[in-house]
Image 1 (tube, helix red, strand yellow):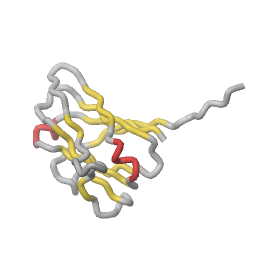
Image 2: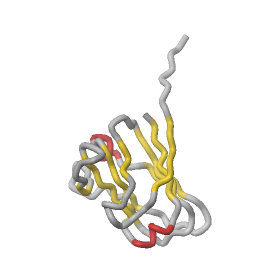
Image 3: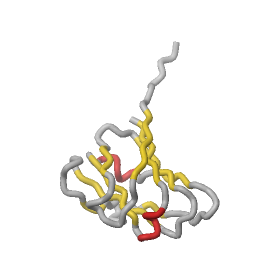
Length: 116
């Protein structure tokens, strides 16, 4: 009989803010991957990812190994929700925050989906 690896899954709402201090802290220390689902109707173009070694640590803007910001570029949609993969650069962090790149992103509904 083939053994299967079972992963746990959880989803929860987050509040998007242009302020890092007000952004929801997401513990990333036991996460294998994740996505963010955004409700329809935003004019925002990006979300920023900030990271720390712990959920109570100092958060800094996350960059990939090439020195580019590990932002999530958003496709425009006025009629349907969109789901975006969280950047691979997150996987070394203990905790992350998703920060709205523009004020327009704060009006939309957002949920984070994580697999451990």
